[in-house]
Image (spheres, protein in one colour):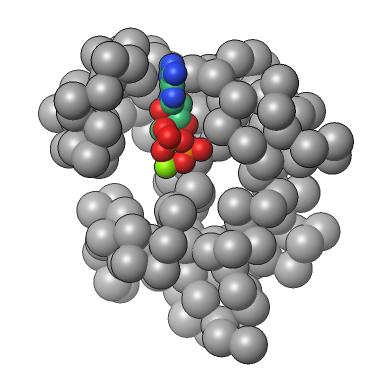
Length: 142
Ligand code: ADP
Ligand code: MG
């Protein structure tokens, strides 16, 4: 199986609820490693650019407003099959549909304020990682 990198974001509802550690521990328990991390608050421009694929969706304004409303933790996660594994650990977009034990089942408030983001494919992972991180900010020692 391939060693991969994927982008993860702990969203403002989860940072404000003090669930950063709980969420990171879910990644670590599932053999994903943190290869880069920063805590920041996104500007409107940065959030809009990140979610550009959703710009025509009705919830775009609400999404950008939420993502800029508080601190986020940006992380590069690394491990075997990291992209698919993170999708599984994270759970469905809507917490009402998320499987038991997933991050969103445990820590999401609603379909919008759903605690975490991850990259949905290897291709988006590449774009999303380089959107937030320079190469020299990513550790490659694992
Ligand atoms: P996912 O994050 O599971 O890949 P999407 O890519 O479809 O989900 O949507 C991106 C983000 O937009 C979601 O994580 C969520 O925060 C927000 N979102 C999606 N659908 C809705 C909706 N119907 N209403 C409000 N926000 C939404
Ligand atoms: Mg998505």
